[in-house]
Amino acid sequence: MWPLYAAGFTTAFGAHGIAATLGSNSEDAVTSLLVLGGLLALYDGAEVLLKPLFGTLADRIGARPVLLGGLVAFAAASALYVMADSPGWLWAARLGQGAAASAFSPSASALVARLNPAAKHGRAFGSYGFYKSIGYTLGPLLGGVLVWAGGLRLLFAVLAVLGAAVAVWATVAVPVVPPLPKARQTVLDLARRLADPSFLAPTAALAAATAALSVGVGFLPVSGRAAGLGTVVTGAAVSVLAGCAAVVQPRAGRALDDGRLTTRTGLAAGLMATASGLACAMLPGLTGVLLGAALIGVGTGLITPLGFAALAASTPTERLGQTMGAAELGRELGDAGGPLLVAAVASLTTLTYGFGALAAVIGTGAVVAIVHRRSASVVLKPGTDR
Image (tube, rainbow, N blue to C red; front, side):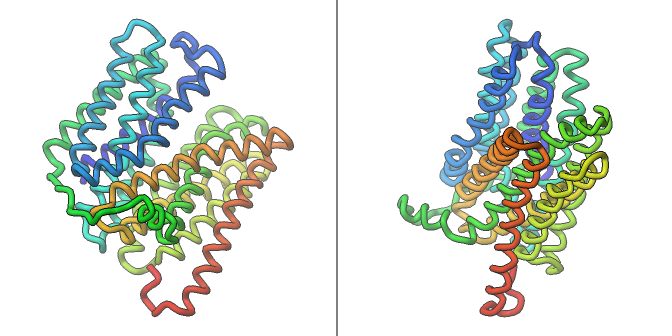
């Protein structure tokens, strides 16, 4: 399992480490906000388009070769920018990283499910999410240090070495998990499965959590600066968010496996905590920033392992890659949609109302989940609410 955790760390560290440092390096061809936005969109766009495709490929040929291929490609794309003389190669390297992460990220999730019994999926996905959260936390911090010491090329060099090292580790330690025989699936069958509530509910919760996480990382520092807080304080707030998510995820996973927490209850509580965090972010000053960060972190920490465990439990084993890829697509849409919603509302009013708008959307989702849980409990037998 450790190489899979390392793969999760790699994708998170690479995504946030570069994204958080691109804007401060005009000498590395990031010369305008338009260029910065293009570089960020290039990586995310590759993930949106390719994750479902690579997830399906993992089901067809096995998740392990797709994982290894993605890690090798990630290392090669990172090394491309290190070796290139022209800053224009930054675009190619960023596109290559996004495409590679689209391969090894859903493959790693599928392997986490395949290599663990269903009774331990909560723990497994909680641990996997923990190491991804560590990557999200350390990415901006270590990335900033590396860029300060040697520019973006040093950061890309570290990512190349990291990707290659994890690929070698996975080659040695991750067992071969052959693809399972599958019944023929038509496009209509796929549409029905992806439209089923057992897929839509956890995927929507994961998208909401990712939207709140992205908004917290991107806009809480803006809110803090507007209140006169320094860079160190606003940076610490973002670390609080990631730290709370990292601490909660393994505990939520263990509680699910031990029967102390159900999927429906946990997802509803996570959505409510996330919405409350966004509402707290509307408060002025340090109180609003820290409370918002902590509650968003707790909410996303609850939702992430429970959502993936629910997807694994409701998916035929031979279709895990396809499901994880589609769920990752949902998360990417949340990652883009949350900041867009907050920015659109803020541009017409203020950032405070932007936080409130996303809080209302996620809070409505929590209410729907709670109402659905209560209505379902009328017909479900005790113990089936997982």
